[in-house]
Length: 62
Image 1 (cartoon, rainbow, N blue to C red):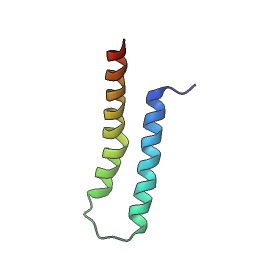
Image 2 (cartoon, one colour; image 1 turned 90 degrees about the vertical axis):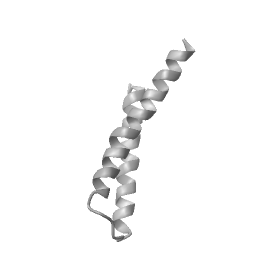
Image 3 (cartoon, rainbow, N blue to C red; image 1 turned 120 degrees about the vertical axis):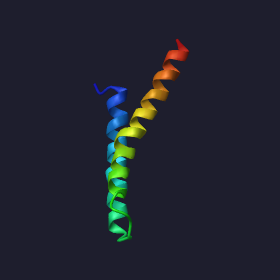
Image 4 (cartoon, rainbow, N blue to C red; image 1 turned 45 degrees about the vertical axis):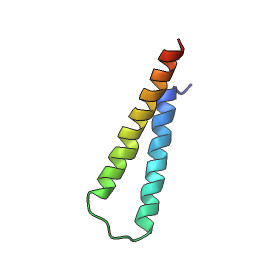
């Protein structure tokens, strides 16, 4: 069984990769740091924030 944390992380990574492919297919001119920021933000920061919020909600319910 997959834990909630792993499901959140996997979903965020899948959405980040999909968004990166969309951005890349648009042939837009963007700075070189944008892909790195996208992957760090969508693959690390967002899942940590979501899991932190869900952990706080669970702790408050107890």
